[in-house]
Image 1: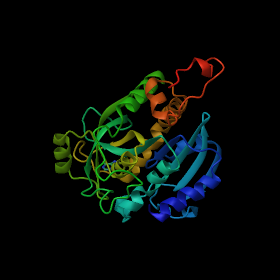
Image 2: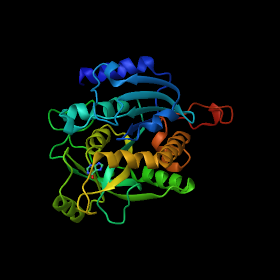
Image 3: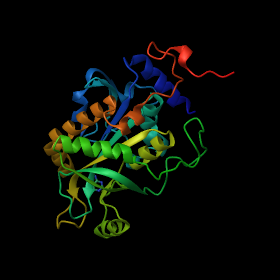
Image 4: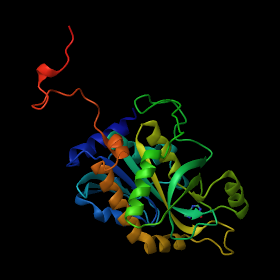
Length: 304
Ligand code: HPA
């Protein structure tokens, strides 16, 4: 194991009051959810040994740990991007730390451009699957078997049971949650209209410059993933106007109330194991049951 990963996780474990059940990675302009964390310990990335620091406007670069509606959670406000020049190992480092800290589920969020013409700026989209158009993969290089297998299965990367939980929570909260495929690109230039037309033909509904690497790393570790995109703009060529980063931040400001409400309810549901799916997703490791008062030992079947 990368000694920096172990050092980060160890260092954090000493400072967190509860082992986290749920991790949340907040995308560009979506940092407000961190304020929902109660009994919060707030740590700048720069203070965590081995943690890469982010420097993009709208990315605070702070780890906030505590509880959300009584569910122990760790929120990463701000991420490092591949386009900043970080290695793929650095890009997925914080996600791997969430896995090492024991998170059973990680909610990965991002700002994305809408490719599908049924989407509108301000929509929230549940990621059903992704297309990796980074041209590389965070697992390139020697495989660390302690993190997971050499060739991880990606056929249910955004787990179906967890997607069902997200959809039912959105319905209950009366929040419109669209569904679609996210294509992750290298950036930092926005796409050309021809690229967007090509991605549409591939079956992508939204495009962004993050998420895919972390989701691959989390799947390798066997951590459940929920992905939510905030459609901050229509992708290049969809509307006859140029793309500007300020629009991304303006849209996240406009939808932040709904976004925070959805995430809060989702973390609570994941913690409570409200559905069979979440119970399964969050169940502790199976241990042999010991006899209880209701089920005395003598009634149990014994061998020999
Ligand atoms: N393209 C790529 N990344 C993005 C976009 C986009 O249109 N909007 C927000 N992030």
